[in-house]
Length: 83
Image 1 (cartoon, helix red, strand yellow):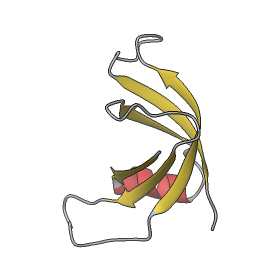
Image 2 (cartoon, one colour):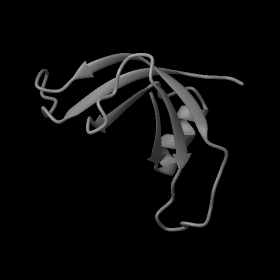
Image 3 (tube, rainbow, N blue to C red):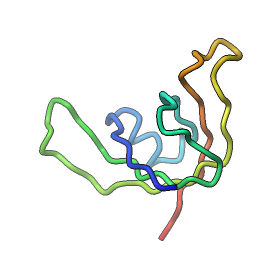
């Protein structure tokens, strides 16, 4: 499955620098290991500003309902897909 998600600048740049390798997201898309995700830069203060998206692949999922994570959320680890 492929997903596209908006990502705030402070997180987008940490991902681009390979310093952030996980995401906390509402699991309203039934994320699965192996899913590919396109992270799009999103700045609500400058909605017309764009940057190159980052393509990632989910490598691990910690489902909500445990470790203080809300049941409707998940934390997923990922790797950047270089093209």
